[in-house]
Length: 324
Ligand SMILES: NC(=O)c1ccc[n+]([C@@H]2O[C@H](COP(=O)([O-])OP(=O)(O)OC[C@H]3O[C@@H](n4cnc5c(N)ncnc54)[C@H](OP(=O)(O)O)[C@@H]3O)[C@@H](O)[C@H]2O)c1
Image 1 (tube, helix red, strand yellow):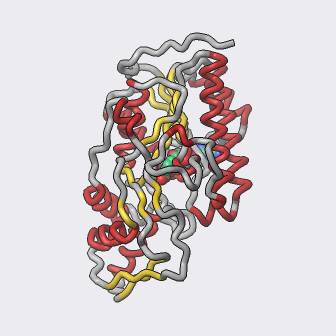
Image 2 (spheres, helix red, strand yellow):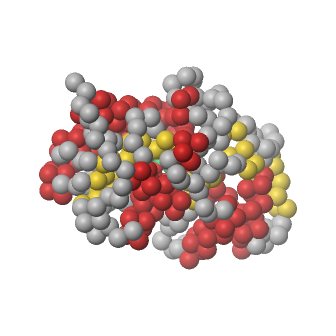
Image 3 (cartoon, helix red, strand yellow):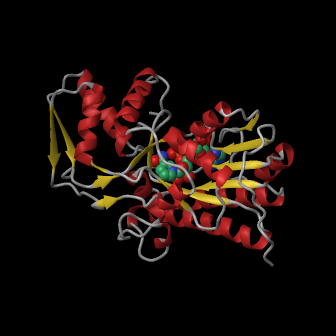
């Protein structure tokens, strides 16, 4: 059953076809930019309107036509707590179908290097901090996004199974919270950082005297700029091989209060920042252990303040086109 894995660290061929699934999303668009900058000439991407990855026949036809040598799977149904909690069936079913179709088609067409992207929510709610890769499947998941997490865990398992059964050197990466150009700033669908940027920017523009945030502001979270994430993805594809998923983060965290202050400062909000402690806080701390990534030779380079300022600039320049 198991075939030997053949992987030699080194540059991917810039002239080979590289399919970025989800190339218009936060992560996919950053990976696309990075690959362009690095000289990849045969990039392929399809919007969900052009190719619905839930449609198995369409996915197989696309792979037969485009025959990619490399694939990054950054297409997924993604959302914040509210969306995950309200539409768990969609987060489970859509993500399973997208993954199974892409991974099956990639396997049938012998894709040489494939990177599957998951999320830090795959880890148990009470995993020891910082969260190591080997804590996967050692405890219960956070119930608000367990359906999404189970789909992502199934993706990691499929990559591992393909490695065992077919000997293809495919890998998985689990990013921490990401932010940057192309993020989702909608009030319903967004994650904490883009939601704060939007709220404080609107408050600054309307000279609102006070902004009140949910919770105490004491939970600690980690944030990685998506351009760093894209650099990490290419680094892993060129330098790392192994069945276990690799955490991708900065290795440092901030309190939500500190985060709100950086955002307020970046948008020029000079009012008061208050905290509604009657609202829930969520997990006290979520920080990934990034020693495996460091050992693979990569570390983040974009500081949080610098990254947030750049994201605010992008948000303001793209207000007309951003996802609402
Ligand atoms: N954002 C984060 O903080 C974060 C953190 C950790 C992990 N991740 C992971 O990174 C990956 C990408 O996340 P993201 O933040 O970049 O999400 P995103 O901005 O919402 O982008 C998702 C992409 O998936 C595509 N897509 C969704 N459903 C599709 C379908 N049925 N057929 C074809 N394409 C489809 C979308 O295409 P269209 O735009 O054409 O509709 C879009 O390009 C996910 O696996 C996610 O778990 C993200």
